[in-house]
Image 1 (spheres, rainbow, N blue to C red):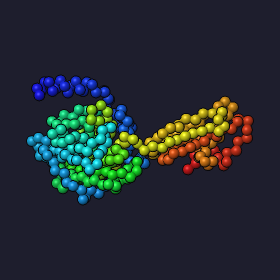
Image 2: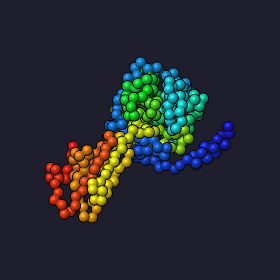
Image 3: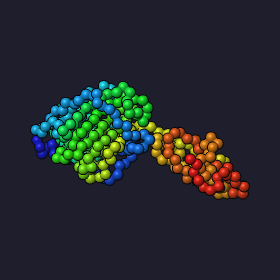
Image 4: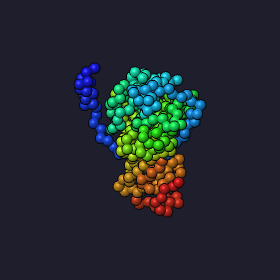
Length: 337
């Protein structure tokens, strides 16, 4: 294709994309609805998977450079994976720290030319697909003892947040940023039934923060979750970043006793492990007494904060201003353990 025509097409596509300001801190969800949490959140623990018996990946060079510096390997997944609403079994693993949902090397060569900041972005390697998991997109290469391999488990050794699931794991072990000696160890874990994605980091060169991209983006380059991008704070070593198309959740419900005594807020569905705050406000002539669950006192603070690890049904109790208040042992505003 004529270079000038190609440039016009790329610019036109870029112009149709939403304008998203680069952020220094990660957001919690994107336009599609993917939600992100980081360790040590309850749904995103660091739990390294042993891939020692996994299959080494044979890389194909993207251009004139060595394949271990600039290359990709096409994989057919043993089970389908849902990514931004599309189910696929085909992807390409890049030497440069990312997965691309592509049919093969002819569609995605695994090359790296820039940091793709901010996300969503149109990659500019020669053959590229936009749907990607960026573990750490950077100019990486194999270290002296580096391995790149994958393994499939019918029951994942790292428990999925949504329950038992099969998973496929891709691991860059002892890779490094080109021109440096510091090593990078990282894994991408794809959960087939629930569509979860966990990116786990062991060793992670601090210098990557200046150039690397961490996050996910959809196949149309319209929606993305950016963890960090060329200069913002990167994930820490020994940490995990998790993405959920349908995040495991808990339901929080509140009721009022008596019903005319006030109002409450904070009901709803929350990602499991998130902080929840329910708040009670007394109506005229009433005073707040306490929060109870199944008759057991929980807090006598009107604003009650807790970690949402299970469904809860909380009762906000009020008393008439003219009543003698018996607080069942609550001598001062406090939160029960």
